[in-house]
Length: 72
Figure 1 (tube, one colour):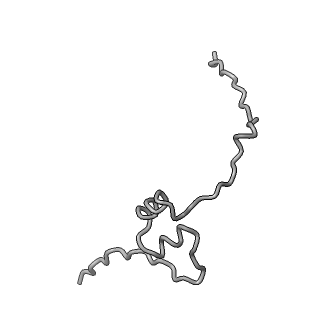
Figure 2 (cartoon, one colour):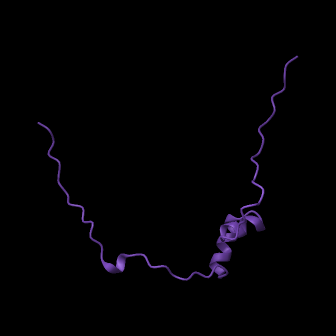
Figure 3 (spheres, one colour):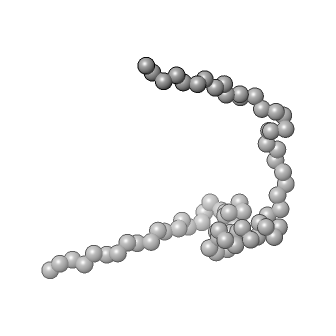
């Protein structure tokens, strides 16, 4: 006999207070500065994370792998 599956109703209704509201965030607050200190590697990264990047900037190049020595 197949196992009986319990039927659960998923309630898709949400209260009005559960909607997201956009709040003003200070990107220069001490908490934000500590966060950017840990995630940025340089000033350009910091600006890009904060939304001040530019489109004409040069792209980062990945590290090159080890070159294999050719056998003679």
